[in-house]
Amino acid sequence: MFEPGSISRQTPSPSAHPYADPAGAIHGDITALIGNTPLLELHRFRRAHDLGARIVAKVEYLNPAGSIKDRTAWAIIREGERSGKLRPGALIFDLTSGNTGIGLAAIGAARGYRTRFYTRDCINPGKIDLLRSYGAEVVQIPNRRFLDPNARDILLAEIKALNPDGFFADQIGNLANPRIHYETTGPEIWRDTGGGIDALVATVGTGGTVSGVGRYLRERNPALHVAVVEPSLASLPSEADPYPDQIEGVHRVSDIPVEALPGVYDPGLADEWLEVGTPEARAAATSLCRTEGLFVGLSGGAAIAAAARLAARPEMADRLIVTILADSGERYLAPPVTG
Picture 1: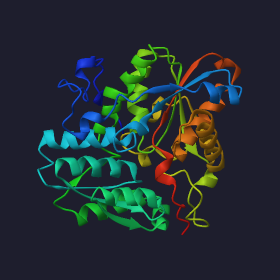
Picture 2: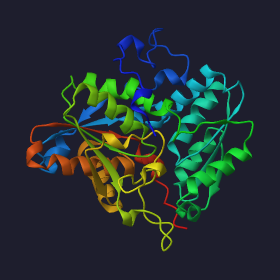
Picture 3: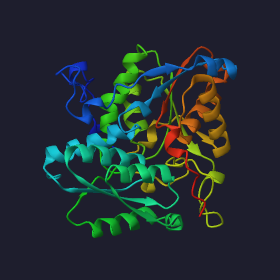
């Protein structure tokens, strides 16, 4: 489990930002382009839905490989290089829903690493194409295998055994994941809102984002309301329907035993869990696209749907809600896999 004490309590200064490039405007590596994504206030969306609260979106698909997971990928690679566990030319591997793998593949290509990723066979073909475009090897696993309560541990053991000489990125257990959001994403939100944020709305993939960002912001504003977004039961794979219309990469956490949660996720941060079904997420994503010109994936749609629900509460009138748009809808344009 993500331990609060594993992340520094000290407020990072702007010069300490891990992605700061003192060399100027001409950058020498893709990693210098990661982070410092903009916040955009959703004025037209707010008016269209008659919402009392202000909603501001952190547009993370403007990272160079197209998602918030670029931050996580670079943090993991950088820590691997610093520790000496990741050697030049090594193989990087992990189990992924796509975006962390894409970030690792892109940065790996730029830094001379080989990459291999294991994914569910229901992952959108657009993500698979992206992984392969960066030179990654992709191994797809039948989605039925993930229905076993111990599936993740079983699969990870198999995957590690198949890659004994590779560097295991371990996105769900690597504390570099929440740490980078504590060091960069959280401070960026605090800086760009002038410390005026009242609520954070975020989905959970590994849980690294909401844990790192939530902890940083909560330390500065103890009254911060943290709402975790999770898919409805109908949007999850089951024995009866192993290939449902799902919100890819977003997981339930509210009714999961603590020992089964990702190691980087801090369950103590959430004030509430907002359940969103796939149709609601898709409708919110469409509305966002047509009111604000932001084309987001279903995880972004789920985050926006939940933020809108929170923004409609009378007690939230004129408050500032920040939500995170993890990736672009462009990587989901291919028809979803249905079995």
